[in-house]
Image (cartoon, rainbow, N blue to C red; front, side, top):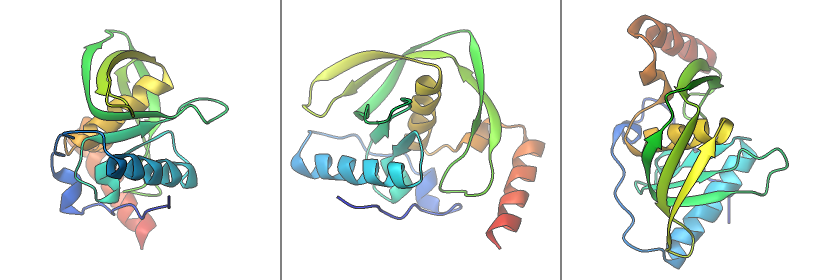
Length: 165
């Protein structure tokens, strides 16, 4: 287990759609372990494998107050999203130093393979739901700032370049 470096925007791998996971293997479990170590080191509430240069549909999320409640997901898919929205400041280690207030559904139901290779359906609410949606966006090659208007996105990216200098 180790902390892996996060890709820096605008690395083109961050725009690629991640490949499905065929089976839960020891290699997949090792990637999840590294992702958890990386997420904790940030610190953050979630991480998708493409963020560390692994082009697989793997995510980890832990939005618990006490930590240690990590949910490992392979091939996550949103089955249902609430109509009620929740605003939250989102950021990414791939574009450090900036954040934006994003509105997403307050609750989602997600189907995924767990660490044992069993298909699960689970409801996520609040920060958990926000993080799960954020990670699934990464698996689709999307960044949180893609949800902003063009003007706000351009301002955020300009600010990020200044911070990164």
